[in-house]
Amino acid sequence: MRLDEVRGFVFDVDGTLVHRAGEEVRLVPGAREVLGRIRASGRPYALFTNGSHVAPEALASELRRAGLPVGDEELLTPLRSVQTYLRRFRPDARVLPFLTDAARDYLLAGGVRLVDGHDDAHTDAVFVAQPSGVDFDELERAARAVIGGARLLTGSYVPAYAGAGGPIFSRGAMLTAALAKATGARPVVVGKPSHAAVRELRARLGVPSEEMAVIGDDVSLDVALGHLGGSMTVLVRTGISADVDLSRVPETRRPHLTLNSVGELLERL
Image 1 (cartoon, rainbow, N blue to C red):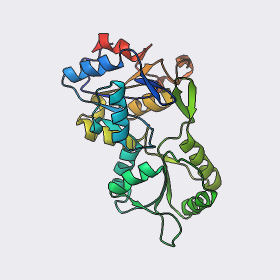
Image 2: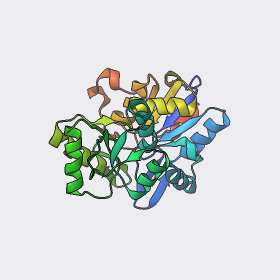
Image 3: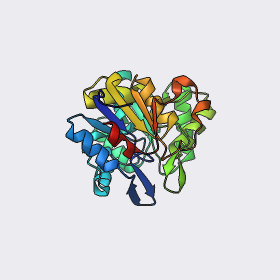
Image 4: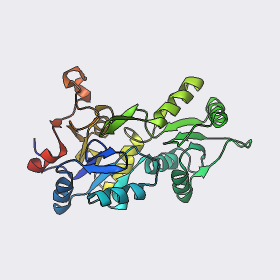
């Protein structure tokens, strides 16, 4: 299977293009060359990670230092796609967030109305990204807001993502699960995989999602995102789904193509 007809590419980051070991970011062999080949062909690409502890521009800068050719606007996270979601849901929504300080500053700069839950004003949504800690009083205020009708939004709801030394557990998913358990609400994912993410990718790449290829290491995140938008899906075996038996995955959820590593894309571009 070749990718000559693909007009836009979406790459996962951790487990697909890089592995992290503490503060060190290691490129997966061939990652830089694949992005360079696509760039030279004139086709657009974006990197979408569910990491949301810092602004997307900070993540892009980190990846450039590691050697990946990625611009600030080519790095997407739930901090971008949640704004896409809120514009459709309610542009003036009052949002009670669970964020790091850096992520909070980013959303405030983007015009998102953030509240702390202390006042009596109505809360329209609770958004869980990648919190640095847990305050149980704040958690209870969020639960009451959700019971009162606020939507429970989360950047990601999978338990872990790939690290160099094994799975890195998602604190955001843990906190979201606590709120879901307490309120009975079903979380709305605004990162991967979600319709908000698909809309964000269409806008960023200027390409219909049906003409994109989504490449990643996670069947439940990256491959699911591709299927949601009708895209070609490519699973690489360098991350969280390295040992998944695809014969046990429903046929409609399987990737169209499976490779050992992202570097194998070079012979198909």
